[in-house]
Length: 282
Length: 238
Image (cartoon, rainbow over all chains, first blue to last red; front, top):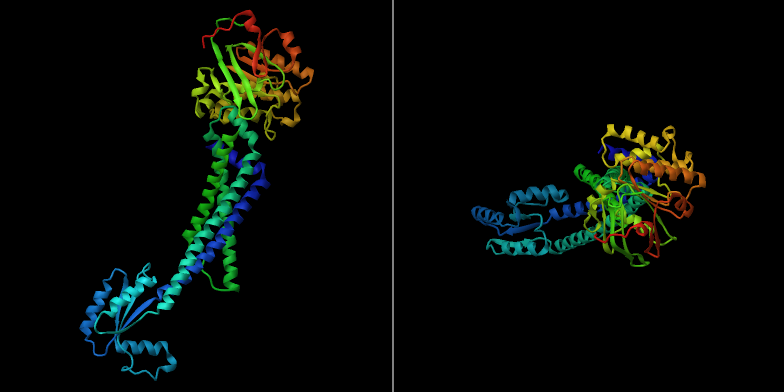
């Protein structure tokens, strides 16, 4: 292990330019991937925020007994799709309306606004079909006068989310593959630059596992350094966009850590594969 | 000369090697090298000398027939067996194959380090090997600071440092002038005299003629002459 560490370190020392180049390559490939991830993350957050507003409101006929409404709230609240069902009395509706529509605060009168049951759906149940199905069930209560949920709007948000998800996965895979290919090529260059050393190791009877280990360490370290560089660049880009264009969200620390770990993994794995192929070929 | 009945450490039994593109490299080779023997391998370029040597250190496997080296059968050997066998062989090439950025001493110690030799044992072994090839005073020199003959001595020291039972030399003097050639050849003779078998591929007929050692000649992949067979028939009991 100590020898493998020393050989890995010597690899950096002997070919500083090539090592720096491969770290830069790994860094920039992961940076491109990180930028894409940043965009995907923010689109997803935006869609989610809009989606969370999906609300079904069932207006009740005047004079509906409070007990009947409360029973319905309990009922609806136990639907598997429903996150929360809430009774809003005429008075509460008035307070809300006055708060939300300040310009008209004097116009509202408790008698104008109907009481309602407001329903929020669980994440994953906000697709148009579920929304309209729940709406239909609400409509079945005799004391429900009208159900509103902005069907048009729900449909659009849902489609946007589907497109964003599919495009995200496709682009993400493309970016990741490009990163892996570029990183693999860089590592292959390192391996080829040390072909003689590898040949000598084999000649004197070093095992393939032993030959691989310094490259594995080297690839791992390069991956971490490249990953950190990509993280720094992505963070800088995020700062720039947030200050100049629009407020964006950055990766959670755990996700950022995962990104750097992925860099290390790609580095180590790419090296292992590259050396493995080299050992098979020669 | 060698004892006729000494046990064979290298045995080729009807070995052929064919490459998909270039065709036959070796055809029906049977031979045996005894413990402590010195064997010249000669023949024109492309006659199969290097392929035959590669089969001894299991870099190539036979297409037909089998090779047995120190009890290891080529047809049954896996990665770890190959590595283990090579630790008991010494290999030397025409182009030395030294690491240019390491001193003579480090080139030799590298061979021990990568097979996991305990640290404390490495220093004395390296010093002994360098002394054996007459390079004790140049341990700290880089390959480019050494002459061709000296570089080949470093390569031989690296091959010897693990006390091999056989030294395989593929044209070890091919890049050297006459004087250096004589020096390297004498060194190989000394190594052989100390008990290590030597199989040396060479074009240098002068060297062969003057030495009177066992000579195997290949031509187009076939064994066309074996001076040992002239003296005694090759027993086909492999």
